[in-house]
Image (cartoon, rainbow, N blue to C red; front, side):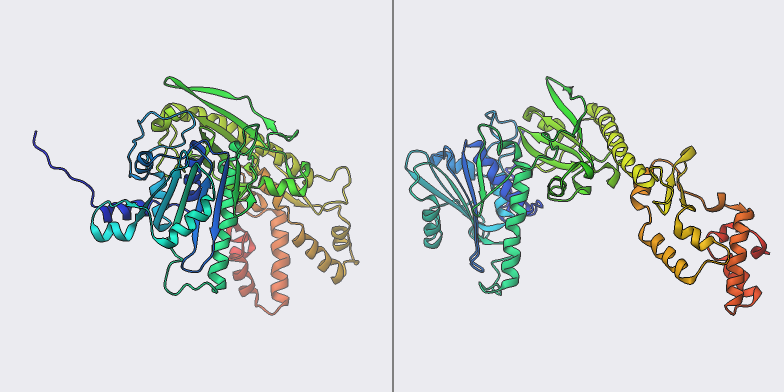
Length: 491
């Protein structure tokens, strides 16, 4: 057959790679992937503020690269997803270094050495776009060379990746003394540190742990499952078959707040906070791909009562295609055959997590044998939430006492009720997949005696406040819950 060679136009390809949606911490994580794959024991991420000349670098002491290997590493998609990789290689499509870098900077320089001989190659996106060719430059400009020399020091092996002309910071109106932009730049340092601590947690602990630093601060691993805490509940781990490999799934239910110190509770919330950290954690070769997500399952929304549910999923790299691991290594789509099993495990974990918080909520709502302690009673009899004011409370008793209910007592009671609305108990007892919302006075229909008595008091209050009887009844007709009830006001 005849054919045409339809090679991608460089400027368009660069624009596409630059628009994959990397955050800066995620882009740095892609560079750290390469350092880990290269067997580095020490990895330094450096942020340096210099106005529009600010730069970011990742330096490692891994095995480095020869000149030929460096050119391959700098070539877009030089190795496809089916390329045979070592067991420690965290790569996927062969575009991570380039796509991550192009999303953050206009100039990418890489210096690498294996046995004392350093090689440097540079992608300058201005050169690529102006020439219309994939011109991988030998060496780099004088200013960049000075930075590379400083970063590599006297090392005879390793790799230095340097981003210059950073997107968002290389504009003409950015000056070195711009405190607002500088604060924004260094805010990325903290975000990057916490993100790397989450993504590479398994590489930052154990006997062969790496030393990873961000601007001189050691990155501490963040364990989303609090694996070493004695109060963590572990559900039985399962090995789910997927072709010739197996996917390991283990669910954890974390301790409730009363079993944690304030420091433990704050740290367990993770970089994004408790609500956004619940759900599945998908790992590929011990590298976190997805952190805290319910994988799009129906009726599995993020809700606070499921905050304690976290599920570890370990997928072998051989299953990348089945899991739909994306270029950024930040999202997955579970294989069809595993979805029912993952949903079953998720529902079990969510139920147990809700039970833990429900127990705490019920304890908070109970009187503990003392009818005077709580202003509210919250129950869920017959599948319906029931929320009542505790009529045994001394302030309620004072307000109800004939001839003794002073305005001060009523004000104090109102303020107490405002300050103690049982939100926590209602939150953990409410079931999203059931219709358990309380219905005032038994629901729509004919008003019972209790509803009529309350309406009569409101009616008399409106009349004594200056409204005509007709206007008072009209107001009652539009006032919840009497707008859903029939009584003297609806005639």
